[in-house]
Amino acid sequence: MPLEALAPFLLPLTTMKSLPAIALMPPQASLPISPPGEVPFVQDSTIGEAQKTSPRTGRPNRTRDDTNLGRRVLIVDDEAVILFGFKKVLQGNGVEVDTAETLQEAVDLLETRDYRCVITDLKLSGSSNDDGFEIMQRVKGRKPETKIIMITGYGSPEVMEKALSEGASYYYEKPVSATILRDALKRLGL
Image (cartoon, rainbow, N blue to C red):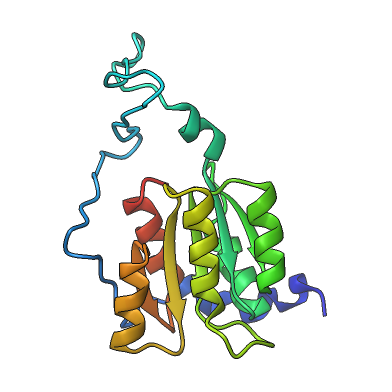
């Protein structure tokens, strides 16, 4: 069945209010919050000094990494309906979304594209492993500045602790509304 045929069933995903979810950040983490439309201040090691500001806007110029990463997000989940719904809701306003249903699809995309954020499910179909952790390790090994949001239907305090200690910016237990993910992406600068 094509994903477009599932659209009538996705209305609840786009209209539901925030559902209970756990959203924790490691205590040592602090995210810079910028006013809407502002680019967060970034230190660029290739310049050596704090970034130069744009003479036109007075805002810091984007770094090469910022430009290369654009505003691309990868969503990894074994449920096509979740991928379709989240992509439909999160894509737009300059945010590009790619999706992967399997670990191998995710690995292939991670090897060919750079992402500002990866939203990954912990467990993917056809595997008894915690594929989400393998995805996190690959992302952090290749591009440590990429932000990660872990979502799972198999949550526990131990899983949450491991996700946050291995570099996840946010951890949510399913069900997760699109509003919660959209807000998390905004807090991460997307």
